[in-house]
Amino acid sequence: MNSAMDNERAAKTHSMKRGKIFLIKTVPVILALILLSYAALNLYAMGGGEREGSRPVRVRVSGTVRLVGNDPVTSLVITGENREWQIVKNEENKLKHLQQQNVTVRGREYYVDLFFANGTPAGRHYYLKNITVISR
Image 1 (cartoon, rainbow, N blue to C red):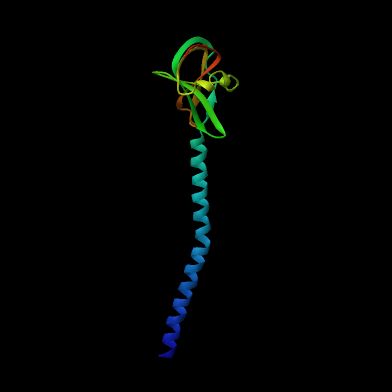
Image 2: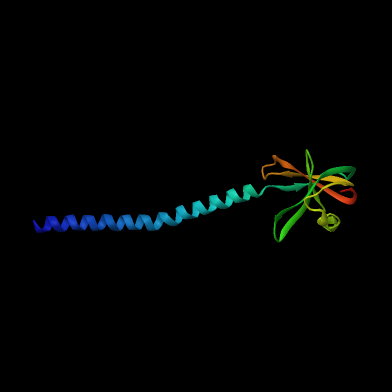
């Protein structure tokens, strides 16, 4: 009877050791797969970036001057009825003091098409440069 109990204990100990070995071998593999999947999804989400857009065209734009973004990366934009134009950095001083006011400006508009990593369109950013304030 004693040997039967010893055999039972030995079998339990052996199965516990096998279970621990299984966990020790598989957990790192599972964690590595999860991390690789996460990294792959982030790369996909980062997108394909920008592609060359249009040539600058003279336009007259009316809208509200707004500051968007978070410090230290902010942008000045003019929000019109159907579009938002980002002001080129070296021209922001012309409009910075007019934030939250409706303005009409003349300038040169160009756009840059944005694409996801798989090549599908992600939208278009419009920019204004060579700005002259017409009215406030």
